[in-house]
Image (cartoon, rainbow, N blue to C red; front, top):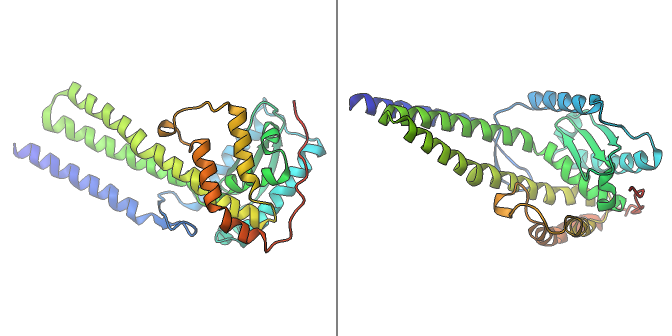
Length: 287
């Protein structure tokens, strides 16, 4: 009995230690005031971003577009979003980044991303959804926010903390009962609970945060933020409303996203109306 109590006390100490480690890495998002758990340094994150970007660019299956009709509008929009980022509440971070933009010739992939350190990639398959440079600004504002807000580091930190807690609880289950099958069942149940109850909602928060800050960046760059609503309306039409239920998805549902964007629009429009509007040129047609 004493051994079990002692083991439980050790487990409690370990859990508290993990919790304190998390608190030591807490920061506050300057736009939303949300507390962020960050157990990875900015330098580490930027190094991982550069490494991942190199792997993408060196992939023999990846074809980098050299077509000025595709490359120039992407670079033009990216440059304005980057300048807005350097004026934003993330100015210090944005000025540390070594920005780079690549257009990937893949008309079937509706995607774009921005990695830590400012490494941006845009797939030509996003053009029909973005439709205009203003639509692309909404996409890039969103993706750049993920990098500036350190969402990748936050997700990795949360994963590390969850894994540590699962390992500790697995030790506790073995010490308390000696029933291996019972311990494994508890671990499996808690693992599912952690995924659905912690990690996925956490990722949805990131997506909503990127939507919000992203339209503020797009507006500051001179692009009409209302185009973000049209972007997601087109995305919903193209996807046919299909996809995982919002409860099990890392992204908010299309309807939720559109409702949130409309709620934030007055703030974005107030910024946009102080800027010189940028012409929303049409993006090239891809098939």
